[in-house]
Image 1 (cartoon, rainbow, N blue to C red):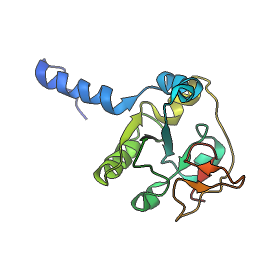
Image 2 (cartoon, rainbow, N blue to C red; image 1 turned 120 degrees about the vertical axis):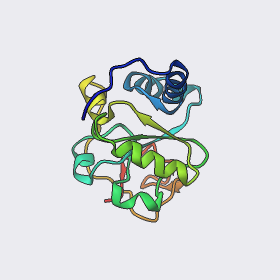
Image 3 (tube, helix red, strand yellow; image 1 turned 135 degrees about the horizontal axis):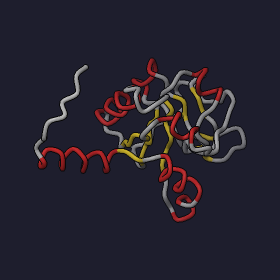
Image 4 (cartoon, one colour; image 1 turned 90 degrees about the horizontal axis):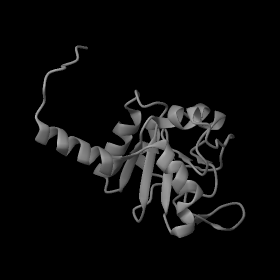
Length: 159
């Protein structure tokens, strides 16, 4: 693929970067929100669109695993809060494709820049293990402890 390094239209670039800022977040900002933001009312779901095996080997704390073959189920997504979607790396387009599908179905979405690899490279907390999420479960259903599960307290997966 050839890169075009000629001057571009500044107005078009402005629109692109305004959208990028509105619809993506970096791992540092997300880690801060996980550590401090929930205490002040920030509420969001983390949606891992990698394979179940990759998810079980490591994922962001509280993430729901929704691999590509299950996107159409929209299982675990929330209409009433932001869904932050991530894939394996920033070079992978899987998270962007998932975010497009979820947004097209009416869900508020944002993409994590750099994906799981960026999160891991910064040494942020990673949870491991297979989770209890199954097709047909929706957010707000009880988890094993009987507490409401809004997709952020249990390590959830479709598998």
